[in-house]
Length: 404
Image 1 (cartoon, one colour):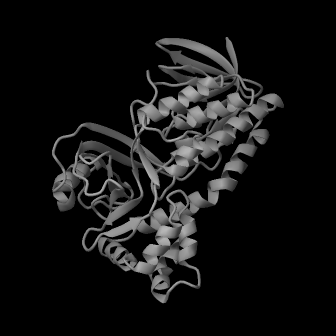
Image 2 (cartoon, helix red, strand yellow; image 1 turned 135 degrees about the vertical axis):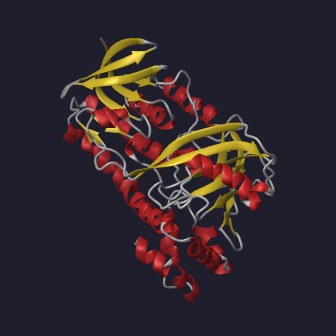
Image 3 (cartoon, helix red, strand yellow; image 1 turned 45 degrees about the vertical axis):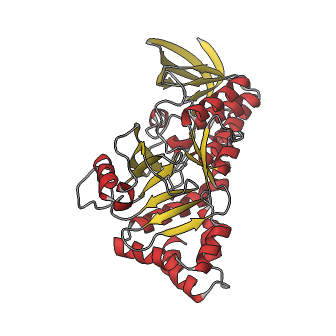
């Protein structure tokens, strides 16, 4: 039986960062990826904040960055669109295949071993070491590890095996890469209201003639049409006049997946840590999980390696991971969930009114100065400062009451 200090399940960005940090801190590390190649299939919009890219210890480059964006156009069901201009690059539109592979290579360069086409189908052992059964290229192999880091995605089997429960909710999402004429490739477009019940739809420009158009919906939200995400996307492409006038027809690519919201109550047990989508470490306001996942993955890798060095992989020892990541982003995720619930509960006319009220120079200036797609609480607190105008305070009074 092969022995490792740390086994990381999943070689997406979170798994690769965790494996890299475990290896950097001296742990003999194995990454196990169930798919035959890194970065495929893609289950993400591919819009990464500048902070997310930095958190992965990687510099943006032409080999994986297709476009950069600085702002967003928010389209309500009716009324004038809201233009939010960050004035500088806020996010990158990337090739997730290339991006993910770069991160896996970085992990390997730091000493992590990688097994592709390998699926974990069993974990045993209560203390000391974990015995892990892996179906590798059709044959069962068994390895031992002192710590297992689960980065195996939204429906984590490792979290289930460890009895750590599941995330609060999963939003079904779908995205198509389509011929699309973007008016300004510096801006993503967001579509809110009943056209994407409970969350939002988007058009992310890859270049002047191609965009990624998709949506996520909240199945808890009442959907009077009874349509699923796929049907709603088809309706959006041809039924939304703004999109239909720019959509060239057909699809170049289609991806589907789930967005986990609400972190697990516990992200550790004896010899096991849970990170990324598997732990629900995803921003409820945008559905993005690379920044939060990478931040937590670094902590997971460090704590796992420390557990190996100190020969203590007990639940009590590994609780340090849970404590540290919650100290960094726990409050932000909790506030994000309240924002998600509040916005998701608004009717179309209420959303239209909210967006219209934000079309105010003072409010837009505040959003430009303090808007942060990774830390929305910064903007909310600035909006509620006593120095803000009466108009601004009125706009956010009910919002703040629900969120804060």
